Image (cartoon, rainbow, N blue to C red):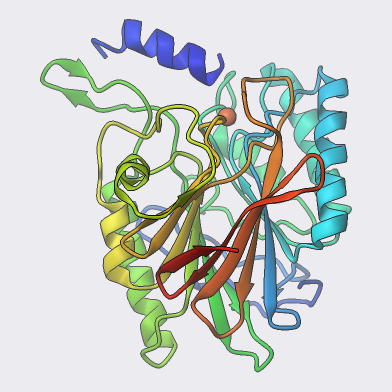
Length: 357
Ligand SMILES: [Fe+2]
């Protein structure tokens, strides 16, 4: 069921209802949380490092790869290859709805995708979208496939067996942490009941995840001599604030081609990020017709560009979001690399200020 079908059926039913350096074993020590406590990675996985003062991230979102649609995933792979060749990312951020299609074919598609990603020789981290876990997929089983990727930096939660929420350090030339990347599970659909029946629609962050993020931000400050390390967060379902920000902010760039389909409930993740003082940018997927970036009280709220092909809906040009973090500064540049090789909607972020360039 695609997202539009889901929204429709939910309305009907739901009214009631770089890399390459061998990492030290403690490089991922900061993934512990009450809900998910990532295990240490096995040795041989990459650490994340700035190169020449930059850490270049390529966001891949909503690829919706389907094993039985090889002509479509071939187009998606070719687009990703082209952009990787031109943008030379240090890291790939996969923000959900990665693999869809019939359940029995998903392992084969994941294997193909992971092999494809590993071919670039750069680290990557994965979160799930609402469609990844459909079709009878077991999240723990799927997660065991994902972490088998050679350059995958995800960790498994030892209790649930799912991908853990993580805080990934990115090291500067002097060996100290200069950037942190949070990858968070935004889940799929609401499972909460109100007095009138099931709260419809998509999920929201659980209170324990919000508490975890707060603690991680505090731990980061303590670990780094009182310094708020510039940070970014990646997940699938946009926050409720994406809509508010688009409508109220003085700065916005890109397209809002459909409503923001966040969960119905604001469980306070944005406030935790704001008060934590570390996060400078949030990058989600989910809404295929939105690719904008906007300002919400000094934090960038951005969508990736729609990275997939004709296995789901979109009215936008295909594109991939590039994010260039600057070492030692609370700054990044970002743009959408479209399918014609253009860099569009170029934005420079600096200490809460935004400008096009
Ligand atoms: Fe999607």
